[in-house]
Length: 292
Image (tube, rainbow, N blue to C red; front, side, top):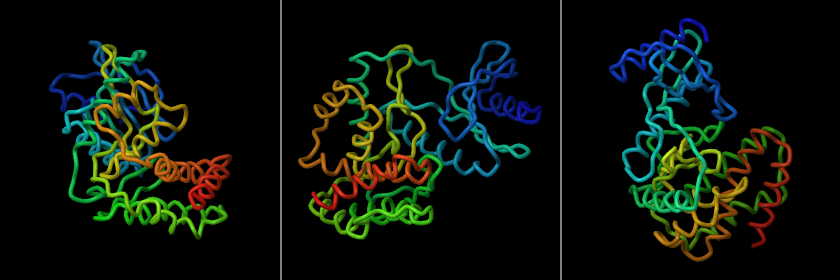
């Protein structure tokens, strides 16, 4: 860590907490595939979680901090507390509360299901968000819409298809997909629920006392089923989580086919960011949706 960043972090943490924070050492930790992340540890044992990247990523950090603040205000499921964002020299940084994570158990997963259901009860009068943000490293458009089908078609699938075309990815039956979206969502009229937006197993965990916590959000107001759908990708969550969620807030009929549609957004995004097998997986999903 260069000296200018060290000084900036120490001042930011000290100002935010009201306690002198002098970094004694750092401990590298996983923070996703985009940013450099570490735990800053002070001389008296204080700890803060820090993400850093180039100066151009300041807007990403700002959007993440704003989402975490909104999620925290819902008082339903724990998220890391944002401490400070800033820029120094050619770097941007985000400082968060450092949490101690532990192994999960059935009770913890049940609590997460119940708490996520409570989060989804926080609603708005339209779909979208106050500003655009990011899904991973890709821009996520959150222009407000009153109609869910319009929002998902125009601001989720269309931008990903345009990005795919620029990267040379073309999908059979792509031209029929947008019509399939309208057909699948025609009779589905969800409330605009507060969403985590990027909820998979890598963005959820449990504190030492078993308290559920979610992090790295890409929040907006949308169909709550989108959060549930993505939890089933990349290994999925245990049955106790889904049973507890449905007990608290039962899902509507035909949510399975909508799950495929909603997860197409994430798979297209992965295809655009990483290529490889995600491109073929997106094509398979498009074929399934067009012919369902």
